[in-house]
Image (cartoon, rainbow, N blue to C red; front, top):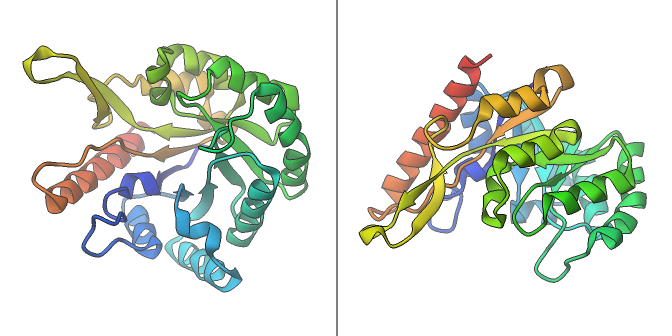
Length: 267
């Protein structure tokens, strides 16, 4: 069975430094549950890596109180970094950690990545945690899949976000086809091109779910998340609004509500 949830990326502006009072994780949990979510993905949330055991226990207790399961998200595949996030996942009761192959100071090729990941993924498997590598423009999907196939462990898979790869001139449908059988998590965010002023180029940015170019129905048909127990996590690419924080926060909230309503109605 698939579960629907929300990522910190759906609260990107509301928990950012631009917010007069950034949302806390506990507030994001409460909002997610109110919108019908069952899982929350703490993804690329810098404070998390520095939390001590007591704070991690507080976060887990807050998620439990909200009736949510947790997932964790980071970047990079250096063993020490991923093993630290395995500890965090264990403390939070999370069974999925999302990461990306590259960081600003470490860009391993497929062979090096596979060598680094084999022992780390074995440690994840020992604790029943799955590591998912996200599709994105810095790594060709064929190279990402070569790493997954080289490691060849069911506890290593793909976090599928087809919109990320358009910047690499990869068609979303091709990305879905290449990764579907190894997908362990889906990031649900719509996207669209709009003309710039004067018709001098395009802006590629987020769109409300169902109003952009994402063929979510085709993604679901290929991945079969209900059959395979793959969770679907709402994210956004919401540009900052010229009117300022209040307008941006209201639109972010509206998009999140719309996405969750759309997903729950699709069941």
